[in-house]
Length: 236
Image 1 (cartoon, helix red, strand yellow):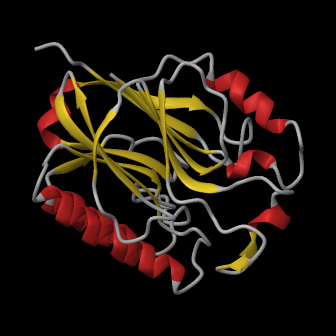
Image 2 (cartoon, helix red, strand yellow):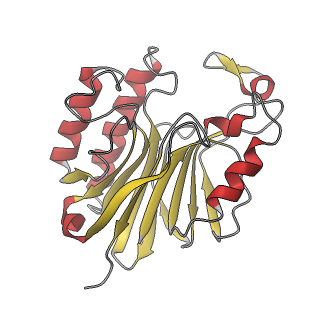
């Protein structure tokens, strides 16, 4: 089972009317079971039967400091999107429906929950970064009470490598996330990817099923983020 995530920076809609076509062409050549897009727009990805969106960003008004309609030349904006070959079985409540999704899927690994997020929608700017971190922690702790097969996926705006402290919002965020992952028995599958701030966090119970993890697209090819993936062995 392959899971990937990429922040597409709104598909470059602030500057280009056609860059999204390059993104679609690239992503349509990948064989993935789940793809999490952050800072997304609706993409035509026929390899996926299902797509699930966080609540659309408000149109034609300034919201949290930005008029998305003006900035993206009329494009509809969604902070997180899940593209899936599998239909969602359950939606979980989240504190911020514009930034997060929490969906349960029946897979060959059993029932799993994909929790998608951005922590630092405006990078270090407060109060957003602090509130998004608090939302993530509270959401995930609540979800974990029901289903421990919890995957946390998205743009965390932090590297977990000791020598890459410049690639993070702040040390408090990094340490808070590490503590959350420890409390919920989760592993940072993408931890060792250098200069990377987008992550896939998997349950430790699946740690021995990780076949590979890595980068499927480098920074500044499709966006200013690396696209990362994890492949898990589903055979018993």
